[in-house]
Image (cartoon, rainbow over all chains, first blue to last red; front, side, top):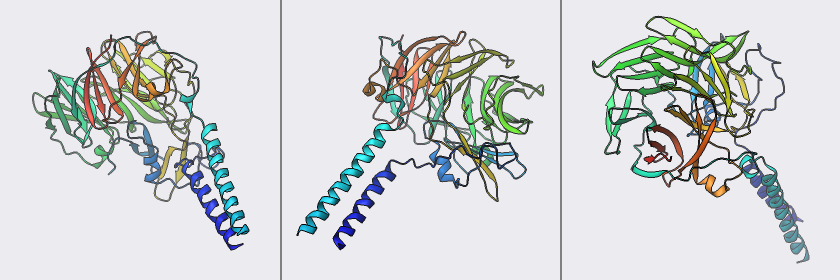
Length: 88
Length: 352
């Protein structure tokens, strides 16, 4: 019985690892709460953390797309971030 | 012994189940280039012929201009420019003397022509124009919001894709500025407004000196916008693929210190790098045509060519991918293509 438990744990670990390997590293945000929680100046709000790691994950090195835009507390655009620039 | 066998068998079944599940996920996942994309390309018979090749200096980013038989590349440090001749015979360094700061460094592009070098600092927002002959500079604050894309129309006129709050929502619009005359012109109903701060319509702003047209190529859809230098819409065109709508959506995060908007979905690029030359628009596409094999598409960068005046598709050709890594930038100068790879710079003869 003990061995059966052990083998189930090992199997589930392998399956979990394999599944997570194919799950996108960048979390996708369901389009719920559209305009619901903010002042209508931006798209939807999420509780997912947005860190510089997330931002960089959105920035393939070869495409100079906008990765992120930071706003100050007054809602003014503070900084635009693109993939091919050094971040201070 | 029987129990051990049973456990072992169960483990094998579970592992097989996991492998099959993952396989099914891979098969059903959205891979646009594995299936028919509903369009074909017209390829030139002639191939891109390699003329010159050197290892890329580690800090080089884009080709930022050419003048007097020299080619210039900007680097990841604002104001440091690499210079080489049209045979890639050695690399020299040009240093612009200016009090560059972290704000400039955080978002800038470099443009070099025969008379001036420009640093377009989107986060200032500022334009700094260096006079090569007089070794002097002029810098202008642009009295508006920050800009994500910029072009030089002539030495006194610049166009930007700039943030603007419209009806309480951040959008990006096209603006033309003459800092010498202190005039600002704004487009009217040219930009799409998706209320996502311009993320889904992010793209590359270009200028063709031959036709005097301004072109905007979107990264995530097949949409092309063509304007004159007064920012009047000439036409809304499209690339030959069938990706009409961007699947990219923006996501917003509010934190105590600041607020951030970023891409909330995986990026699905349609058009990558693009450039103009002598009335033609060259776009490196990320979408495979139905008359291409997957292997050829994966091992080459396909470039589609359009007539800028009409928006009409003309033909396509390949820039070979090399062991030097993927293509990160390319420009067409007369009958040559200057290609920046991850680890190399190469010059090819432009197929005709």
